[in-house]
Image: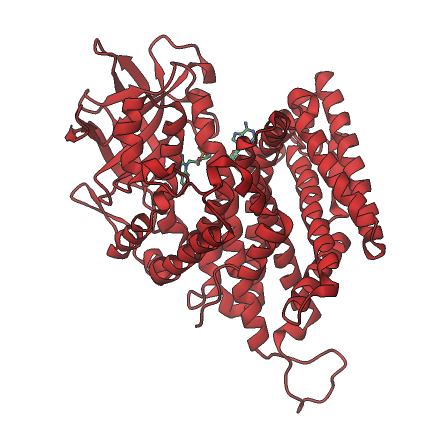
Length: 600
Ligand SMILES: Cc1cc2nc3c(=O)[nH]c(=O)nc-3n(C[C@H](O)[C@H](O)[C@H](O)COP(=O)(O)OP(=O)(O)OC[C@H]3O[C@@H](n4cnc5c(N)ncnc54)[C@H](O)[C@@H]3O)c2cc1C
């Protein structure tokens, strides 16, 4: 069994430098000390550590999942070794300021680095990814002391972090959490409750674990408005920053997962002895808003992580299809002729093209959204505001469309390998299992669809959606100026108009009181806007490829031709699906809504 490249580096460079032009971030004062060379060096270093330290134990981590021994989590030793390399190279502080020991890299470049780690080993990267998200949250909402005691050690790679939202009875509906926080005379809190599904919730990797936990303070308003955010350290931290006594956080059990088995998943109990120390973050009852800061970044991370698994499966099945010979063309009757390679069968090419379209399209959208995060530093207020609105709208699409379709890509990779794909001797089944969590956690994809249609597309009178459709329309206008792209540009423009009309129809119906019925079609709306957005990425790629082809060298020509063909394929086979999705949404289809419990 041979391995394939983690991420197609040519495609990554194409996205970063030919499509997005990330070089323009160098004009921001925060990044003036960077250059394309420093960006590339960071990505190259990430690739090297991913290949040398993360990839080799990807299968071992799957086969030897974490164990609970004498109340402690035991991991395979390679995880700690990989994280030592990761932290030693400074990736835990990739976004941080230089004076905090950070690399001060743009978010989009850190995403490119992360794509290497998550492609190599989705289980192991979960530990620092969660820790970094916790540090980022504290950087914005923590006090100076909280930053010193909890954020700084994470960025130094000494502490890890978690997000403790879910409870056994409250997953999608966080308004129903029961974990309680009682204020103490010294202003700290005592926490009581249980948290379910906590990734990286307990282990011996670092000196401490900083749990960012949602709880309700006694007397808080009901629902999400009564939720506050707390820092709950595994070990208390003394006033001088040194490690204090063990906090009352108990590891109650491990969850045994289908995939990403290297990352431990825990059931935690807080305050079993009545002495679980917690510190309030920010203002009481604002916790969910703060947590969304962490979750939005995590959701882009989840979508991107999913797409990297899709990419690994695609790369592997492509290599396999080029090597394995099987069967002949329908019109080749001679049984003595040599069997053809799988890639020569049109149906195999169809499955490869579907993967290419889903994966590379979603990568473009994910990196585009990551760059919108960096535009928060733009001196122009309009750019900052518009980027924020676009990001709000695109986040559920990247999370849900990215994870749903990269999982479909993994299915197709298995299919291309035939029976071999179904065995553990080949890596594509693990890609699928590792990827299967992504439509579930960080808000299920059903919840993302409700968020998209019920909230994000309607926010500020649909301002984010108008911006997105405006950007797509601009690309259509540019593409229409080229003879070869006139037809797809017109096709996408029609889909944009359909998306706008469908949203108007849904908004009108919801305003008239049909909220439940309209939102019963939210997943179809996700298909509509997801497919339109991905079609945009393909027209954009085709536009850049068309312009580049005349001057392209022999190595680049097939790369650009591949972009054009994939665009043709997506527009022929996938984009037409938006018409059906739009019909269901604007007609407020009630075939699922009207089904009765007892009729099943
Ligand atoms: C491997 C793994 C890692 C995780 N890591 C973490 C973590 O680190 N921290 C953390 O806090 N949580 C974590 N979670 C929890 C995860 O976020 C929840 O599993 C998820 O939010 C869904 O909650 P649930 O499992 O209770 O399912 P439920 O909420 O019971 O949902 C079940 C199904 O019903 C649907 N549904 C629920 N409500 C609605 C609704 N209002 N409208 C339409 N459909 C609905 C859902 O879409 C889903 O399909 C993790 C979970 C797993 C499996």
